[in-house]
Length: 258
Ligand SMILES: [Zn+2]
Image (cartoon, rainbow, N blue to C red):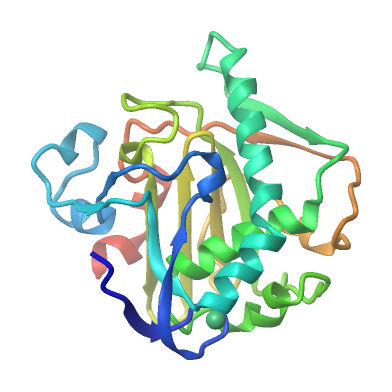
């Protein structure tokens, strides 16, 4: 308790004291004790179903789900500029799912006229910076630390969004339905995913042509100005969260070969 970690900040690259980045932000209710499982370890042990977490090693996080990944300056910068725009969407979608009785629908429509689209997108990239190993996303530093910066490398990265309608067993933000997957393989391929009721996001690098991308491509969100609230609509497919790692991730050889 209270033991501070030191290391490289995943956004700015400075080495020093690291602070706890809540994933998702605290504002959506992520403040309670959770147990986090390393899904790649689980997959390597042949545990692919949600029920397989039973008896598997998990790390208790008293303050909610997250990771010690950001320096204090980057954490408060991104927290104050992006987190609320992201959280308000999550809370709104939560309500939207409440209104549906049938969770078997194949897709939902994500449609906004009042969303600070760039801020929402930058929070997603902030999350991916935390999920991916330190130093691997330093090319997003200026994009994240200057809220008006629009220099996102969309030639390199593709970001997609999926709906995660299944609340599973332990509440709408329980950790058991959180999947944080990050893997780099072959030195030139990056795949990261964050899937947590009610929305999930996938990050692909475009330098591997063999990867099929899943979800609705939302990379174009990076092209709006900070504070701009355009009409933005996209149909997002629902993913089945019975599995710890969605089947489309399991198909990737990077996961089994490492
Ligand atoms: Zn930093």
